[in-house]
Image (tube, rainbow, N blue to C red; front, top):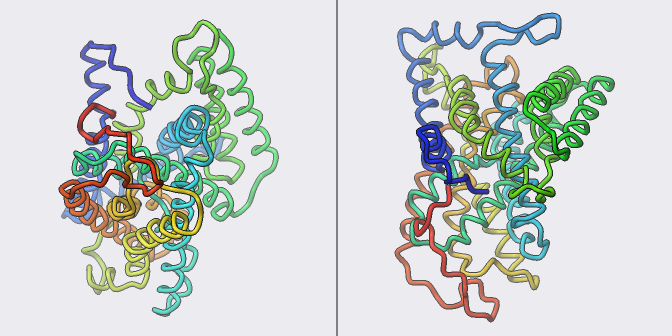
Length: 423
């Protein structure tokens, strides 16, 4: 989905700047870097105190630390935009035609299974079976970071490559949401969960009515979120469900689908506030304390397992599944995309960051592996980003054939990344 460019007011210009793919990636990087520096500075106790500061009404069991509010509350805003994006892709985007969506969808599945296998194999081989609950940490892909790196270093490559990555990443996020809901929910309270689902359904009905207004939708969405939080299911799931029930087709008398309008409204908040603030509280790992210092932290098996899962597991999963599917079945890559283009795409999917940090916190609550796992997520993401940048530039410099996807039909899609604004 693209952001409207009609508003030329100062707010409109700021909103467009904030929602650019490159801007979103930079904001995430700056927030994470600031947290790391502060958490390892002489004033790191202040960072810890800020993260652990408890606010919120205890009567509703919402007396949470600021770090928890960022993970459970602000990240739900991001997942709401993920739900909107997924709904758009299912109804009017790249997922509406199963045959065309099949390859990136299968690549996303491979890109989740292989990193989990790599993680489990390595932690078992390195003698740390207690780390197994973190198997899903290297399976996630950060859409904002991945698209930002592609936008910066992929200029001149087919625009279809961005669509392929977006489809893959959206499916990846959907699978990650399912994993969180199924494997990282210790106990479910049925009544609050049913109440939350009723709230989501009511939200969906209201978004289809002509007189739907934000002052009705916001309280209803908040109630659904509170009940989801009380149910024991991670509260961000409510954000996804709320996004999925917004209509993606144009309603009578309206020029654009509401899913696009809501995305246009919420995405600046997600990009400029929700994701950077979450990154700030999640990425602040203190590595200078402890008897062994940074070396002891980096020597933990989870560091090797997560880093290898993100960098190598993701690459092997995406490339391997795509190669098998396109060689053994009639399915082909989209027009203008060749198998060689998926080398940088495989590295891009290894940029786990946001969702990987969230799963880290869910995997090791109160565990001394948490810090090591977060360091591994940051390290793996940065290595994957660097390799993606190098391979994107190299791929863009190579000559392209007339039938890159080898479907027997000359490529007709001539759009190139950087030729037009798309984020």
